[in-house]
Amino acid sequence: MGFFSWKTSDTKRSICNVHSSRKTFPVMMITPEGDLYFENKYDGYGVFGGKDFYVAVAETNVPDECNGDIDHDRLLGIELECKKGTLSPRFVEIFELDGADYDSIAPSEHCEVQGFFY
Image 1 (cartoon, one colour):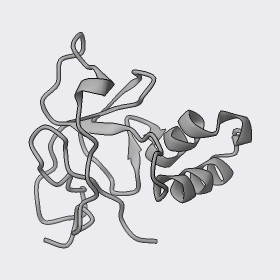
Image 2 (cartoon, one colour):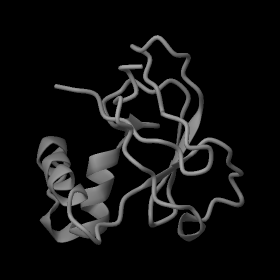
Image 3 (cartoon, rainbow, N blue to C red):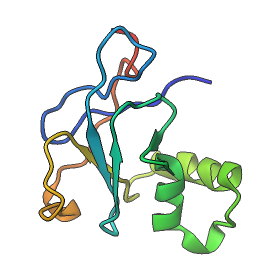
């Protein structure tokens, strides 16, 4: 299985993982529902602050198809994330807990080096 990574919406930095040659930095994942997940040392597999990015995608876009099985819900999210119009969490490096607003943050781009291959 490969790594998953994105660039932060505010600084455009690649979210590197603990396995890479770069030092990790804190990021906040913000869902469309306004849930915040803080991650200090990203492991590279899509989980931020205990929340799987792809499960969050599935829960946001097709909640009736989610069954609570992480593998099932994650695969749904992976399939959905490739489709136009899918709402996905966004990542920021500079954040204020009281000022986090999903709609004011640009979508986060995928990182072409997967947070590892620098």
